[in-house]
Structures are given as C-alpha cells and as structure tokens.
Image (tube, rainbow, N blue to C red; front, side):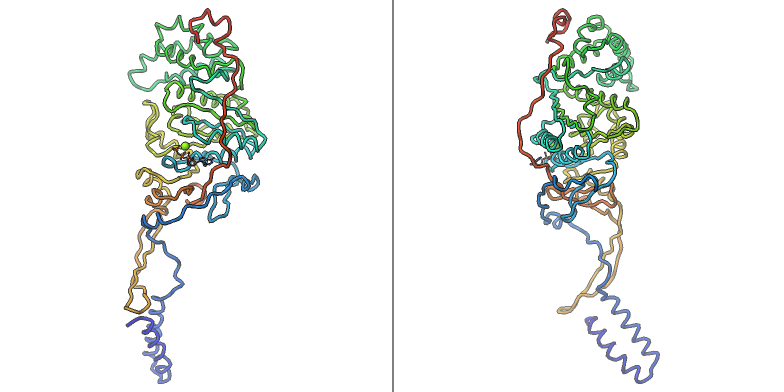
Amino acid sequence: MPSLLRIGVFAAVLPWLLWHGDLRLTILGLLGVLFLSRTLRLSEPPWLQARDVRQDLARPPPAPYDPAPLLNREAGWLLGLAEGRPCYLPGPLPHLQVVGGSGCGKSAALGVWAAQALAMGEGVLYFDPKDDLWAASALADAAARMGCRFQMLDLRPQAPAQFNLIADCDRHSLYDLLIHGLDLLESGSDADFYRLADRQGARLLADAWRPGDTLATLAARSLASLRRKAPALCLRLQEIAEIAAAQGRQGPRIAELLQPGSACYVLGSTRLDTVRRLQRMLLLRLIQCAETRARPVAQPCCVILDEFRYHLCRGSLDALSTIRDRGIHLILAHQSLGDLAAGPADLDARAVAAAVHENCALKLVFRLQDPDTAEWMARKSGQVTQVRRHGQAWPGSMPYLDKVSEATGPWINASTLLHLAPRMAVLYGHGQARELAQSAWRCVRRPLSAEAVDDSRLQPDFAHLELRP
Ligand SMILES: Nc1ncnc2c1ncn2[C@@H]1O[C@H](COP(=O)(O)OP(=O)(O)OP(=O)(O)O)[C@@H](O)[C@H]1O
Ligand SMILES: [Mg+2]
C-alpha cells in the first residue's frame, strides 16, 4: 500500500481509537504515523548526487565576460565568477599554480592575472616560452590602460641586442649565475668529477669580470685560456654569448624590471636549448636582484611563468620556497603533473612536484586531459560523505524513502575535472574547492617587438677578440 495512504488510514483511525480510550493502540498508532511521516519527510537536507560524466558534459559553458570593470583593488584579487557574481581574494596573492590541458584557457587567464597585478600597483614579468598568440597584446593593453611602462625582451636568436644580462653583477653573483645557468651544479653523480674543471673555469671567469662587461665581451676576453681545461663551460657560454638579445650595451636593468609600474614580456623558446638556457639565466638573475632588495619590500612583483616545464631548474625551484619573502609572487602554468617531471636530469621529479604543490597555496584547475592529474586533483578537493537515498514507488504513487546509505568520495571528482566546460576552472586554496568562471583579457591583437640597443659585440675592440658576431 502506498505510504501516503497508510499515513491517511492511521491518521483517520487515531481519533476513533482515542475516543474509545484504548491507550496502547493510540500510542502504537502515533508511532506508526511518526515513522511513516519520517520516511516521506521532504525537508531532508539536500544530499549529494553521485555525478556521472553525462551530467558533467551536459553543463553549458559560462558566458564570456569582460574582467576589466570587475577589478577592484579594495576588494582584492578577482578569482572568477561564481554564479555570475565576482569572487575576490583579499590580501596578498600567494604563489598560484594554473593547470589544464592544451587550449583550455590557461594563458588567457594569465593575461587577466597580469592585468590585475598591474592594477594592484605591482610590476609584472611575464615569461612566455611559447610565443602565445594573445599574451603580449594582453599585457601591452593592460599596461597601457593602467598607465604602466610595457617592454618586451625577445630572447630568440634572430632578435637584436636589448639588455645586458650581467649588468650590475658582482663576482659572486656572476659565479652563481654561471654555475646555475650553465648546468655546472653538483648532482651527486660521477659526472661531478668532470665538472670540477668547468666550475673552476667559472670561478676564473667571475674573477675576470669588469664593470660594463656583457657575457659576450667576458667570454671573448677569457675563453681562449679556458678552452682546453673547461670545454663544457666554454661551449655553453659561447652559445649564450652568440644570442644577441642579452649582449646589449644599454637597455633595461634587470632590477628595474621588478619595480612597480613595469610590465615586461619575455619571449623565449620551447625548442631551442640555448634560448631555454638564457630564459632560465634571466629568471635566476631576477631572483638574485630580488634577493638584494631591502626587506620588507614595499610593493611586491608578480612573475608569471607560462609553460613552467621550460623554467624548471634548481634555481627556480628553490625560489618557490624563498622568493615570497623577497616580494615576488609566482604564477606558474602547466598542463599536467607529468610536466613537473620534465626538468633537467639532476632534478628529482617527486621533489619538484612536492615543492610546487606545497608552495602554490592557490591552484586554478581547468579542464584536464590527463586522468592521473585529475585523480590527484580530485583527492586534493577533500573527502565528503555522500548520502544516497534509495526510494521505492508503487505504480501511480509517490516514491517513498526505502533506505539511506553513506559513502565517502572526493568533493570534486576526477570525471568532473576531465569534463569541465570551456572557461570553467576549479579553484583550490580559498575555502572549499569550487568552480569559477574565467575569462580572457579583452584586447586587440597587435604585433609587438623588442627595442634594440647597441650590440656589445659590435664595439671596435671586440674585433680583436676571439668571438665575433
Ligand atoms: N586575450 C584573449 N582574447 C581573446 N581570446 C583569447 C585571449 N587569450 C586566449 N584566447 C583564446 O582562448 C583560447 C584558449 O587558449 P589559451 O592559449 O589560453 O589555452 P592554453 O590553456 O594556454 O593552451 P596551451 O597549453 O596550449 O598553451 C584560444 O582559443 C585562444 O585563442
Ligand atoms: Mg598557453
């Protein structure tokens, strides 16, 4: 018998039972009504649906929106839209990790973060090894709107001289830069023995440094005497010295790029090994400059590392845990956990992943392509108890609750992360993980180029030296 009918029957006979004074039956009747009404209670707290992939795929993507009018320095950092309303993070921004499969909108979101950092009065350095279609235009547009100075550093071999990587170095910082940048660090393997001569060569080079030197002039003056003893050092340094971009006699000072109101876009390469090395050396030089700033730093600087796998080195990894104190917060983007294992051979992949996960308190996860990354992120979203209610129904009657079971599972499951709609991302690290709509920085795409300065390799005395452009 449908339970609604049963309740009706019980409720109808109760007054009759009471009238006849049968107390035991009356109490039994009351208990029966209570029990049955409990099974039908419609005010049960909402329970969590076990989502399946069809529900995930059926969700429409959020509408694109213009983030510019939503930026609000007082409210904090715009994290995205939750049900159409902007969601802000007050206070300083911790290191942020942006993860998602190719084409899901990471670089688009980075453009908005860069614009926000400028709006907050910070300097921005945007490292792009991939030559993104929109990134430079978005940063240039944001800089123009916020009244900041935009400059581009193009590290590719065909670009002209633009800056001097080792301007303002001293012998200690130059030695450190050479050891880290030219991969001469001790790795704990037999290869360390063969690196000793190269390290010794780096020491001699650092001693030979004179104010005004570029890597090219330093190498040209000093390499002849080192070539036999330290071949690896000489070859790598010569390769770097042949890239004009970092051999400028003038150009922006690296420390200036950290200043508020500066927006610098660094264009590198994902493929050319020497350009990747120069990219890492520039990042290391920035870290060195940040380390010499007086603390506490009045205004932080935002360093964005798109395609993080190409920036992986011991220096950038150490920076993750130390650089926040020096007024730099990092935003790094990559596609999957596998990218964190793609660093140089002397980096332990698990240690890299641990350092990134530990230090990036905030994570923004777009639609993932890699199930392992999705499983990891699902576990990270935390466990919830899912209450499953099992119902029954007779033909033509209302369903009624038959039994309740409980199961624990992730708050956001892996399938959801693998099927997020375009422009939708899950934010971790600000309360409970939740989905927020993201958008791109609206701008017009335009060609941008780096500003050329004098090439130190073209100065008259360089012609007598060993390296020529
Ligand atoms: N500022 C922008 N304005 C308009 N569209 C943009 C902007 N930035 C990116 N897009 C578009 O957004 C889409 C997502 O691209 P995006 O480059 O952000 O993906 P991605 O996650 O960085 O991919 P990949 O890992 O391959 O670099 C692309 O269609 C791109 O053309
Ligand atoms: Mg990208």
